[in-house]
Image (cartoon, rainbow, N blue to C red; front, top):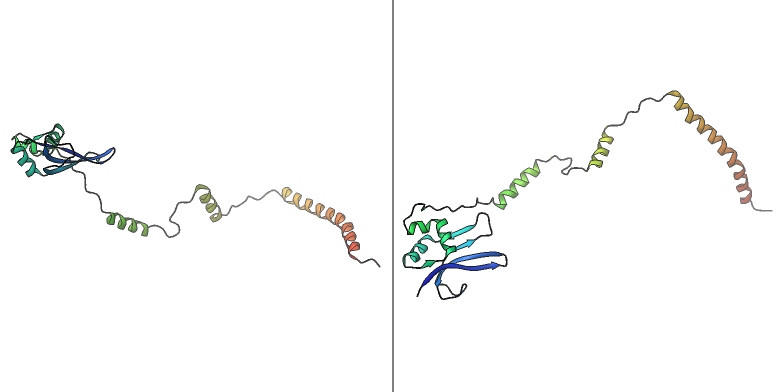
Length: 182
């Protein structure tokens, strides 16, 4: 039986994940495997490549032939160089930085929220900020010339006199309409 080290595709459409498996060379791609020796997820940056080095070296030692894709992955992890005693046995595998815990991010957000000012946590819109500033600082008007001040007052007196002339006859008519006829 000729063994091959190859990729078995998993995952959804357009988001593949692969298992690195050792299988019979005559079997179908995703059929029953002899052994799973690693995983490969190309959709992340950097790609996740996990290979059980001891098992990969064992299968290479007993004659299993890797496909071109798996050979490239083994070169990245350094297992190919270890098997053939080539330079670069440490490989060129890049590892993603560990993610910060959700609990740590939550505690940082709580500490930041406690340091906010008490008078308002949100930023006002531009017009609301202008209105608030106008209320805090009363507008001081410059004194107007005397002619402007007297003119409206004289006009008000004329209008009041005119209203009294018009309203007097109307008031008499209303009073007459309200008295009962004898």
